[in-house]
Length: 274
Image (cartoon, rainbow, N blue to C red):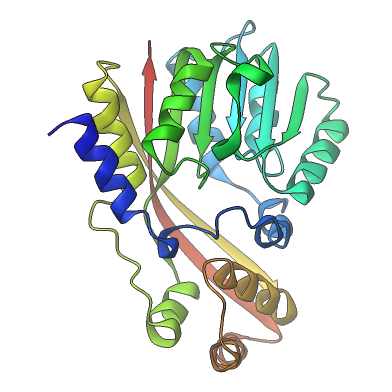
């Protein structure tokens, strides 16, 4: 098996059903509330702890976070690093990130509205600029070309994290019984699988770490309706019949006007040092 084999495999399996509509800023804008909530998220501690433990982050670090969203990881990195640059396709995500940085007094974070697919490293002066480049749960990394660009932007280290498997007590039923969508990736996560093997062929000697997490959230019925319609509609347009069926299912799950979901996840992080 060669680099070309894994690049082609990645391309063939990276269908629209596996990621959000490419370039759809509106789909991500609508989800800003979901990503910017104040609830506990053990992923922050687990992943930041891994980076610190592997000495990929220090007071001299310059970090690029691809798909930074509302800046939760960027803020964690900024507590240690000299500077952090966060990029995202969603204007509203970046607005939230800027507000969060201001609230924390973090003045070493630079935020850019950019699509990683179209980033010109030479034009930005970003070739080998960053000591650490991260893509954490980011659909921006969806090809060998995107991975190569990460390697070109990094002078030292890189980190890619994504879900290997995830079970949501609400959305799993909707996908199976209403949308009839295939939700199982037989390789766990095609992007991480191919990235690891490509990095192996590049002699980057990648390593991998796994984390198991559990997260519970409680939303009002109205909040749940908006959340699940926006989330599921981000992958493909919902028909009127599907929308009605989803709303009816959520209503059936509500207790005293509240909908509770429980998400269990296995997360994999691929990391390397040049």
